Length: 327
Length: 232
Image (cartoon, rainbow over all chains, first blue to last red; front, side, top):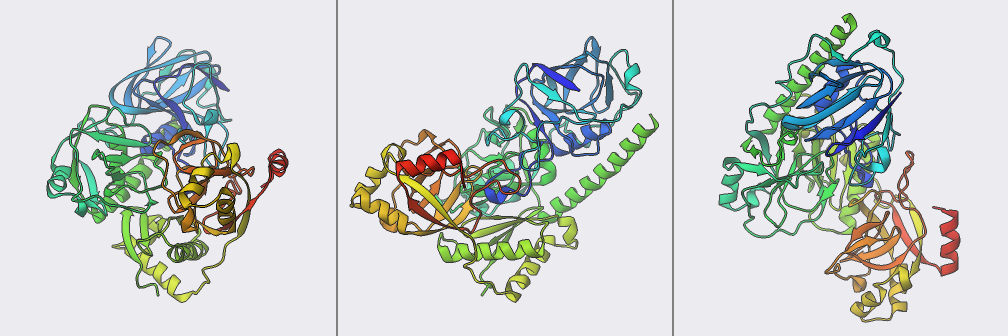
């Protein structure tokens, strides 16, 4: 089972749930930047859950499937065509052998996911197939896809009657993307960070009142925020300690940055905030130039929202599995 | 003795314990002792040690109740108070180094900065016992505490775009080893033929947090032999 990359898109990489348990050795997690979207894409093709999928950015790849395949697309709403047939996202699609899948630009959002039944089977490196672009670890030596790359798909039961598919088509149902994807941008919940109190008074206000824009320098390591510079009351000399995805740091430039999936494991910049875990994928889906503003949240509220999201996700995963069973 | 530990809820699934605010061997030793104890008691919690702090990544659903972070913190404090562990556990790893020459292009500057001969700078660097305070910057990069203060030297004003894997370097009061070829601003004084980081699941990193490290000066000939055998 192989898939050939005809065009790589802007930045496409193999990602799963990320590399755990090696942070103490300086190895970051990497993994899908929009976790729920990645997880749902896997569910929609009947995968057990942690299979590797493709994550693509702003402009998707063009791929040729040598064999029939069961695929699903989630995340940003992306123009997708297999041969001449338009394919919808957030559902399960069937491709006959030889299909060329063209993932184009995105109407909304910034990161899309393509899962295949069986998962992409690049080598497992330190417990994960995720591509860590910064540490050059994972599929294809830890780089983004290039033209001519060949991806392999894992063994799986051919379902449903894959061999009789004569043209690309989608199943007749799809899941509602709205809980998982912000069409209407809203303020993102931010916890005060350890050094929030060290910001000068104007910056403390601005952080929760100003509208920032996403910088074009944003990547899988961090979302950088433009439009307003923040300042500390006085410079701080800090010793390095652990950092996480969602950590909002303030480097000396005054440009706030929010660490993302490829967050380094330690850092020494002042930590002015921590984005609520539930809102981190929402930030990752904002495009360069998009507006973003923050509201203050409490740990209690963000824990509650996280638990609710997990519950909702589990229920949906179960429903998807049941529908696929009866398809 | 653990009453000075402060804590912070860093994220929904992350608790940071602080053992102090300075870079010093005693504080760092407490971090590593605590890490070993937490790891032994709760293997599912991921620990990330730094100079003076320890991050615990845990599943808040497993510590249910109104405040999972407080619960975990209280449990860790009880654990640390109930068990006394010597701070001086940890393996000792000998790292052979070919000092100076093309592998240590900044050795002369470091020696001049310290007001001593290159020979003496090598002797002082090699005489120390170091502690792997933390790993970071890149997979397998050890921040080593214990540099002779005489050898301390600020980072280069213009960082190099490419520092060879194995380079032994000084940055301020720290010394470290580049595990891969990376950009870097530290002063390069030598190079080890050992492989610091390899993609082996069982033990990808030559050095673990809390390990003690000693350097052993070697000559060109031994460097080449060790480089060929790829031993670590």
